[in-house]
Image (tube, rainbow, N blue to C red):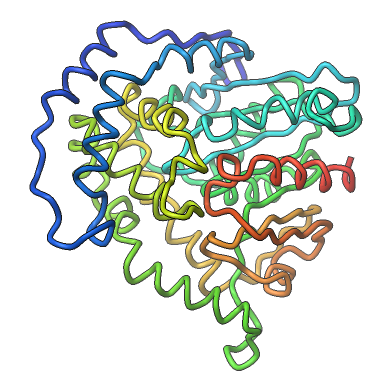
Length: 386
C-alpha cells in the first residue's frame, strides 16, 4: 500500500563482508598506465593501496552502528520500497528538511551534517535553526528497491518524495540536495509548491538563457570553459550510464576493485583538494559510500537514472529552459563544481532567489568537503522561509 511506513534496520550478513574481502584479495590487476598520475584514470598503486585497506582495515559495522542511532524506515511508494533515514530534532519548531543525494554519492554524504542540523546548540548554533532531517535513498541506490520498469526519472522520484514526506507526517518542508538531488529538489518544488517551503540547490541548474557569449562576465566565461572541458575529458561515464548501464553494471556488481575505481575516480576529479583527496574526504567515509554500492549491488540500477533523466538535466545548464521554478530558492556555489551558473543566469529560471552564496573552497561533494559552510548556508536560507 502506498504510503506504508515500516521500521527497518540494516544488518548485512557476515558472509557478505567475508565475500567482499575475498574478492578484493583475489583481484586481477592490470598493468600501470602509460602516463603518470591520474591522466588515464585511477593510478594502479593508489587503487591497490585503497583496496588493501578496504579488505583488511575498513569496518562496515561502524556505519551500521551510525545508522542505528537514527530512525530507519522502508516506505512503500508508487510500487517501490524506499529506504529512509530520519533524524528528529529535539527542538520545538524544527523545520523538516529532505536531503537528496546523487551519483556517485549516497545518503552517506549527509551523515556528518545530521548533528549540526538537528541540534544546533550542541554545535555552536541556535535552537531556532534546527531541522528534522530526512534522508531517502534514490530508487536503485542503497537499500531502496531497484525499479523493474522504465520511467523512474527525476520527476517521478520527486512525486514519490512528496508522498514519503507526508507519510512521515511532514506537510511543509524544505528540500535540498546536490547532483541528482539538485534536480529532484527542483522537480519537487514544481510538483508540490504548496508544501515545499523552499529549495536549496548545490548548485542551481541554469544555462545562459537570454545572455549571449558576448555579454558573459569573466566568471561566466570561466564557468563555460570549465563545462566545455568537462564535456571533452570527463563525461565518458555519463555517456556509458545513459546508453548501456546494463553492460557496465556486470563489472560493477561483480568486481569490487572495478566498482571502487569507477566511483573513486569521480571523487578524486570532482572534489577540491591539493593532491590528497583524503585530506578533505576521509578514506573511511569514502569507503562507506563504495561499500554501500557493493553490498546492495547498485552498479547497474544506479546508472540507469542517467538513461532516464540526464538528457533533460543537461539541457537545463547548457541551453537553459523557459520553465520557471517559483518557490523560494537558496543557492550555494563552490569553486570546483561544474557547472557554476551565475546568479543572473539562475534568476531566469528561479525568479525568487532569497539566498546566494559563493564560497572560496569546495567541489562537487560539498556536504563531505565543506560541511560547516553548507550547514551555514542551509541555516541562513531557512531563516528566510520558515
